[in-house]
Image 1 (cartoon, rainbow, N blue to C red):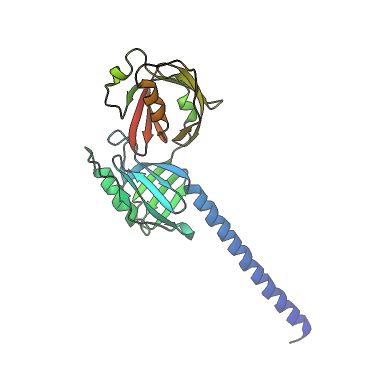
Image 2 (cartoon, helix red, strand yellow):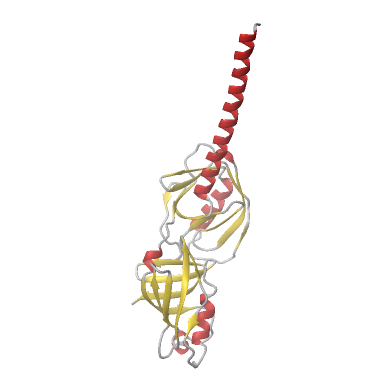
Length: 261
């Protein structure tokens, strides 16, 4: 073999090596992009075993949330969660996790979702729809991405239910019900606690919500209504809006409900 042929062969070997590196980097970038398309987001269950699922089951939205190594979900009754393994090429594995133990009127969606999460071994995302699949069979479950609904919060809401206190709602707020007025543009909320005026900031991410420190006037207040209102707000981590009803949720339990004024 002459020097010219040796040179050509060397160039081919280097070129093939470069192609391999480029393909590896491309595959890694594609995998990272795919993972970022599903993790850190909340997905609403819209179909299970080929059957459409209502927006609310037992008064709650059925959902799935994926993080890098864990998941949480609800079929409209109990909270479900456990470890998660996301691999290259759309592979996925849900570990059997823990669940709350409430009994609800309709447990069929929860039971089907729990079973199908464990059965799923791959996923696909297309046009904002996440599908969980087993092998190449029809999807076991489909979810739609929950968009940030911050603008829907805008306006004034009046409290009409709060969990926790043993005192009846009307006894807790005999003269004035707490209100919240959201300004989505400035991410600020203001209102009256049933006694003092207050304001604070808020942040949303999908249906997740959290509030900044409360600043309020300092009038002395009778009863425990104001203290109950502020302490319950601190526990809120998600919300849902159904027409003119705003519900604040801790985990999977509704702890405050407001009506639009």
